[in-house]
Image (cartoon, rainbow, N blue to C red):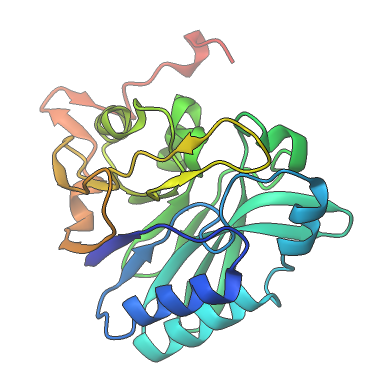
Length: 263
């Protein structure tokens, strides 16, 4: 299975331009799964609620979903991408899963970070896993990484690969995802962005890059630089994520004792 990410710097509010650029980069890609960043086509640092209302899209009828569906069908590939979702009078920080057959599903971010709480409703989808035949995919978005329950829930539901669209500004996530993979024996694809946004007189947000693909044994198969766009793919064997045995006497999930854990 060939998986990867595209790390880049979107221009705030320029959805059509960002889509054009991303699709040009992905034009000749041959892969199974590619992950794009959180809020990939809009940018991140909103100033007014009206900006969110203007840039948010209905799923699956918005232009981001429609154009990625066209690409996925043409390239016979699956793609995970973050976008602001409009649902009735609510707005969510969401990620979509699209495949050659079209729209598959959406996840709404559970753990909102910083000023996201001013503009988005907390996600209500729960952590979902989709079986795409070659693998089972789960999605978490950016700050969800800090909550071990996010990755653990997806792993317990059978996810082989955690797709992790991000706009990371804190320095800890890339190394923490090694632990998330080790403690759940799953692959993870973190797709971060680069660059800086300083809008409306707010302090600048500097995005750390360092997108990465991590294996179930905690090996960093590839990690991006902090300050450059990068499109990377690696080959993985999803069966590695299905073997939860640590040694002949211990199995990661069978040895759990949830009756003793605080909920």
